Image (cartoon, rainbow, N blue to C red; front, top):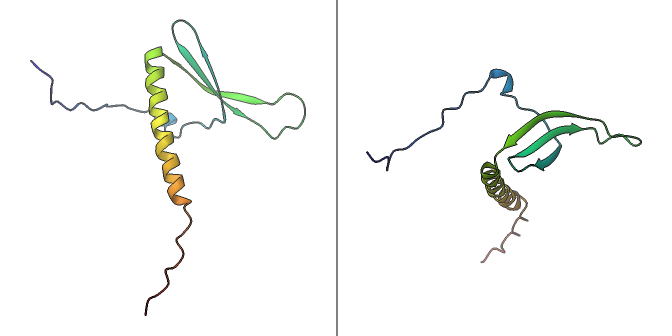
Length: 100
């Protein structure tokens, strides 16, 4: 039996408490022989002296294979976003002179 032509869709469910997501403005990436770990944190950059306070909001462990797929997906999304921003920020064309 061949699976060609069959469309499969992800059926992912969220715990309602996770729907809002979390805010992070800092990430640290580390790795071992087995996996990558991305630690997301919220850092208070307004502190002028001493240690900069922050709190870890989540940590994600991922296989090397998934990490490559994640990087590719992020690069694709970044490219699309920068294209959209570039279009939004194009200068408007000057009005064309009317011909009589």
